[in-house]
Length: 421
Image (cartoon, rainbow, N blue to C red; front, top):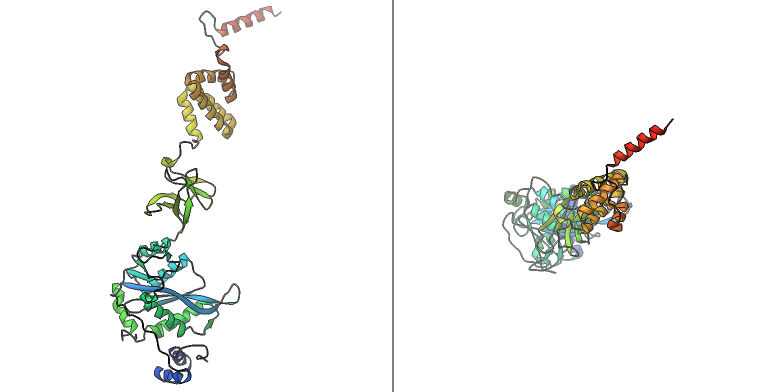
């Protein structure tokens, strides 16, 4: 049955021992199966020796068929394998899908299972890890690069179409595919992972490795003290992308707007964001340009030093400017704001513009007139100034020969009272 599924002699022998209590040896099963299907010649591969704790190799392979709880159908899983270069200790994990974050999370799970981290991680040029292959200077996926940096490790990408550089993990993937997983189907991914973990502990770790001629578990016990310690906190994942700085000096992230430094309008900058922060980075050096707290949708987050001069100031700032222009100008602008609310902001800006055009003294006098007659209105001040000096500036006394108006008022009132019967 196992042979018809394409399983190798080792896997068939291990299943016989686990399920049927088979007492014979592996070589007996191997000789029996060799007569059924003939002997094959394995391909030669180079052996790369590494120091304990120095290197791990990672790769994806095809995993077993597992029933998807959402669709109810069997789906092919992906098999993630991390193999230590010195001891050949491997961590094998199953997942239904892959992404940049899932790829990095699988590394974290593998590091936690090992209890430490190697100084170098060797991988091929899949997009989850390498955005642009180059043997001398590959462009790494920034999220993957930052996760490894958080754990004190660095990525070393292989040459394109050169799998022999990571032959240890290639062997680890093939070993799992041909031995425990070949022809298997599972109802849940948890059951598949449990089966794989049992095989890892029962068979993979206790085997005598064909090259080192030593038990994998014993060599891992030697290598584990040489691994880098795990950091105190796990990595905080973020999303990343590229954004163009708009004319308002901001980039848009999740429908909110975040200010860039002056001089970056029209340029494309890398952006990282999570639930707390948004970071703008220099496109060449990766240096941090600006970091902002996350803003609600539709709102802006701009540092004061980055605000363009054309940005409309706040209402209180406008009122302070009006106070500095003149006492009457400030009083009129505050009266306008009290009566008209937000609609008065533009009109306050208009009064200040008139002061810049005609001079503060003339506008101060016009505002005094408007306050005296009870007209808190920008349009009145503007028309008053447009009519020029032919119209008296106010109804107040402007010549010493003219008596105070209150004297005329009192005189008229007294004469009116005398004439009454």
